[in-house]
Image 1: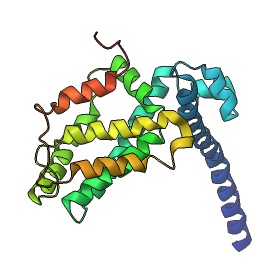
Image 2: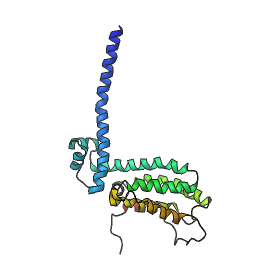
Image 3: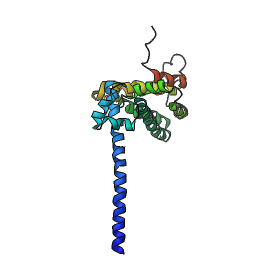
Image 4: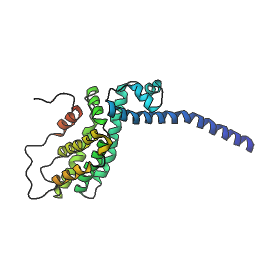
Length: 231
């Protein structure tokens, strides 16, 4: 009886392992395709051939389309993955020891993430074209406003800076990713300059005009580069 039970358990274990193996392979292929798509889109643009994606990932073209029925599905998943990354940053900002530390983390972490993600601007534009109502980025506005308010209350952040101003700075720093890996060791030089300009002190020159509304900034950031600038 004992030997029979052992054989039964071994057969069951082998059966489960066999059924899980294709799932593991599929998951690995999925993750590899996403990673290679980021690199491909960064190098060749959002409309790069998906056949090349298959070659880079070491899979057949059919595998690409089993995971992503079309290019739009791939782009949408890359976008939603980026939103998930941002959600994981948010608790760190809110838990920072001070408002100023939250500002430093915000600019450092999100800018560094963008610098290392040069595929994202094109992905953002394409998703805005595909579905203008898909605007998960707006969920971060209350968190950003809370961080800014806290730093101002501590008198560490200049009073005329808004959350949108900081978002623009993140975009500016993140755009350094266009230079590729060669600039990665240096981008924090620009971050240090920006942080010095954000600190509250008595001899500041007031910022001109009113700050941009977040909704306007959100839509603008998802459409940047899609049309020529007015003359």
